[in-house]
Structures are given as C-alpha cells and as structure tokens.
Length: 162
Image (cartoon, rainbow, N blue to C red):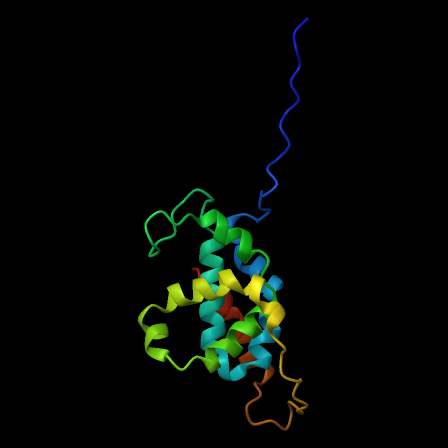
C-alpha cells in the first residue's frame, strides 16, 4: 500500500500581492494616497517618491536582489514589511523627515534612505504620536488644491511606474 503524502501548506510568509499592473492601485489604497496628497499638499514630492519606492519593491520577484542595495539584499523581506504599510506609516516617515537635520545624507541616496525608513516604519510607528489634526476650511485655505489640481496630482502619482 503506497504512502500518501499531503501537499505542504503554503509558506507562512507567502505574500498576497496583486499582479504587477495592479500594484500602483493596491499601494495607493493601502496608504490612502489620495488623502495623503490632500492633507500634505506641501509634501507632494516626498509622498510621490515614497509611493514610487513602495511600488518598485513590491513589483520585484521575491528571490530577486534589490537594485542599488548592498550585495545580496533580497526583495522578499522588504516586501513582507512593505505590504504592512498604511497611511499612518507614511505620516510617521514624513514627520521623521522634518526632524532630520542631515539633509545631505538623504539627498545623496534618497531611494536607499526611503527604503530603510519604509522597511522600519511598521516596527517603529507605535512610538509616534501624530500631531492633532488641523482644523482648516479647505475653501478658505491658500494651500488647498482645487479638485481638478488634486485629481491631476493623484493621476500623476499613480503613473510613477510607467
């Protein structure tokens, strides 16, 4: 009588990420990109750059090496952390960037700096207390975006990987 072996269950660390074409929308929904762009209209470039880094990493195959990283840095561990990212993690990173006085280090290797911040954010965000929400009237605020400009920014942010 032959011994039947059951199929092994899927690995515990299996990451459920949509196909490559749907990653920008997946990430935008996870981090509430529309809300971030609206609430942090003065930080749009940084938000777009963080969004781009997240999308680039999630689009890599698990076993691949991350370009520009130390030799042998695999995408899998980074992807496991990046799928956990939400709006509060991005807000935390934006707050940390304001506090960082060493802008030269950030500008010399911005993608690497952002990757490190994004990788560590799920484990360190618990120590962050966001500032109280600003009570502003968007219709009276000089920094607010009109709807057409806001929609254009969201559309451009989602095209970063094209």
